[in-house]
Amino acid sequence: MNTETGEAKKVKCPQCGEEVENLVAFSLCWQESDFRLVDNEGSYGGPLPDVVPVESIENEFECPKCSAPIATGYHSAVAFLKGEKAEGKS
Image (cartoon, rainbow, N blue to C red; front, side, top):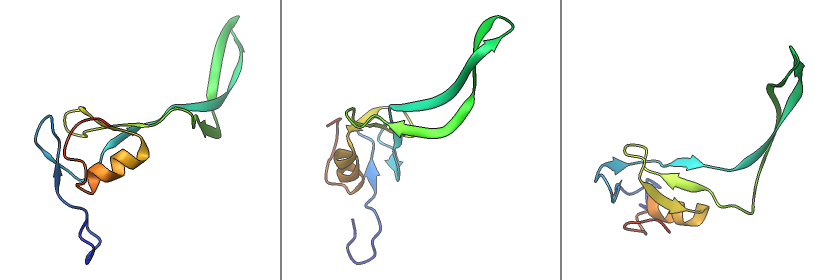
């Protein structure tokens, strides 16, 4: 990161070589929803507002251009975007 401007370094995906400014994050979470019988079948209603992350499982981060795995965990994703991690999943 450029400490003078606060801008992120230009980093490239190790898989496709494209410059990326962000990663796609996948998080496992518990989502509350309504479950009831509709026409004698179980049916999930729309999600209720509570979504709780499962903190014991780290997020996974992928390249937004080619979906290659880039990082596992917040800190390694931040390091990658700062240009501190050159390649690979960590």
